[in-house]
Amino acid sequence: MDKKCPRCSLNNRSSSRSCARCLLELPEEVRLEPEPVRQGLGVKVVRRAAVCVMIIGVTVSGFYLSLILSARPLSAEERSHVETAIDILARAGFKTEVHYLRNYTSFRGNDNWLNSLVPKENAYAATNYPFEIMTVYPDFFVYTADDIERAAVLLHEARHLQGFDEYDAYEFVWKHKERFGWTKANYGHSAVWQNVRKATMDIKPGMFICDFNDFGDCF
View (cartoon, rainbow, N blue to C red):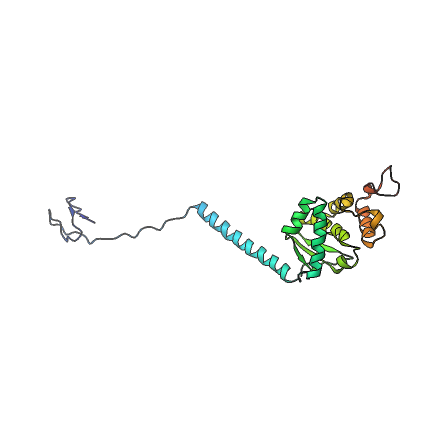
């Protein structure tokens, strides 16, 4: 860079020690360090938000893995019964529920650490929403009459996988039970039928009060 003489304003070479015109001694060259680029407020907010999202993602992923790893997977035989029950629902036209069961659900054979903290009675299955983890208990295989009754249980839990509550799940299964062959004529004396009917009646008593069928359900 040229040195500008402060007296006569002549631009001298950077190596010159005195001005070529007025012979004024020139100051030594001073190199200015570039000022650091200051980040705007928007950039800082975006960066902090990205860090927060990353931390939340790692935390949620760790929580999900802890639920998966703290419970055992289904055995080959148990998995076969579950797949057959899902096929029954697929043939009956429950596309959304089957989609959730086949594509999003991780089936486990016993309680993970979170489920073990909650007392349960006579549970056939349980769902961890929104992690789409379904625990299938031994009662699911022992007390169900066949895979059609297991399909009824899975249909109930599939509603929970979509975020619906107990009221919706019981009502949905009871309204559509004949679509997949779960009828009173064939299963009226089974333990699962009687338990589900009682639970549905307790939650939705209006479904069992109708003019055309005294003391029976309206579906």
